[in-house]
Amino acid sequence: MPDLYDIMDETCGEGTAAIELSEEQKRKQPPRTQLSNLSLPKEKSAIGGACSNLVNSIVGAGIIGIPYALKESGLVAGVILLVFVSYFTDKTLRMLVELAHFHPKLKAVDVLTFEDLISLPFGERGGHFILASMLFVAYGAMVAYLLIIKDTVPIVMGFSDDPGSGGFVQSELVMMITSLVIIVPLSMQRDMSSLAFTSALSVMADIVLVGIIAIFSPFEETVANHGGIGAVMKDNVIGYGFFIGFGVLTTAMTCQHSAFIVSGSLEGLTTKRWGIVTMLSMATACFLCAILGITGYLGFLEETEGDVLNNFDYDALEGTIARCLLALTMFFTYPMEAFVARHVIMKFLYDGDMDGDTSSSESSFLGSLFNRRVKWTWILYLSTLIPALIVDDLGPVLSITGALGGCCLAYIGPGLVYLGINGEFFLDYVGSVLGSKTPTPDASGGVGDDGSYTNMDVDPTSTMQRLSGPKPWWWYPLLMPLWVRIASHGSNGMQERLTVLAAQHRLSLNGEDYLGGETVTPTRGDYFLSIFFIVFGTISLIAGLLSNFIAHVL
Image (tube, rainbow, N blue to C red; front, side):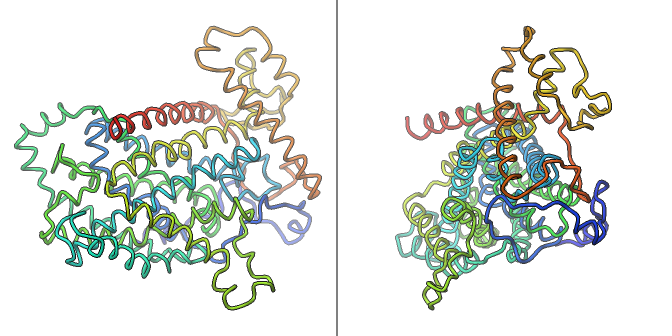
């Protein structure tokens, strides 16, 4: 990666709230516990490696579908959507990792996954909701990557003249052989840090690919033939397939399922270092998607296909180079999603332990060759290969994946988990609004100028008394009973599960007993944003599925 990453890596400290502990203080620290048996990474990466992995998980199959997304949603609306989706993604990535690692209520536990985080306020059902969403997004992306390989590699190798025109040998067999040789070995790796180099190559290939499409797309001629850029924008403000396009954009930007894997591989995790990773990664991804999407769509307008490279002549040199780069990106990005899908399977079946098949009962050669990690990597690969052999159209795969899995993972899940973990403080804030009092009744604390809590002691009795009083006119139109119920359920769940963990592992539930770490407290602005995420994600999910049903079934 560029030297900029390394410079930032050297200049980033442990954060303003972090304190370096002496050996004596470390020995006196209360015990901590890990929520699951997740196998921790054995190798760590610097900011550059983490950025490469995160950008690679974002700029996968979705980037080549951005022109199709702008066609469906409308050029103007699509570009605006892209910017907002990028911001929302950056925000939720920070929100999730800050909740898991720096929340004052969770100092005693090591929360290493999205599903573990949401299971604290919402139990096993919450964890399964996130796991199912992660698996759907990762699986859909893996199928999409194989579809792109099937479209591009045979043309590059000279076995086919046009995507989908060749027989089984020319298309499907080539996809099978190349994916077996390249994808499967990379997917077998244990730690994501092992993919830092291939991720860097993939990102560089994406940058060159975007440049080729921006240079060789016939957008100037096409725009001129349609009356100029003003006329094109006027005719493409918002499209009938708005939510189909939104689904594709969500698929392209959804990387919350990789957040904990990438942050777990980051050496010296702090809010500052993680913020740099998300900011640089999202800015890079948004810029690349915008350039490729705008130039690709303007070059072909209503003829734009789900894979924009299918619009280029198969025998053009620039098209061949672009397909080579896209294939390279797909080969190196598939393993990223395979890591996520394998992680979900490990959580469902083995509580996150993928190193468990090393017992004496499986010490044979075959046992070591087909341990959990290897066995399930093969199963996942074969399960994505079968639909890739049958399906040909990339657009619906991206759109449906984004509408169903992406909305749950990128918007609904983060919103729920923020309200649930901070339920006690949210209820206190709502009660203070109803009672026209300052949140947190303790006079020695309260809420800072930015809306963040400076005192984490809340009086539940006082809060419930204020919530039980008369309600203003906006209470029901803003669906406040729903948000209060979610926060109350999350608050009770947090208290119950943390109390059980404290009893089992002799933990301290007083976050002040754990010295040396950063602390990120909830804010009023993030309460509103989490509610917006839930509403926005739910509407987008329903509208996206209906739009796809109308477009592809009726």
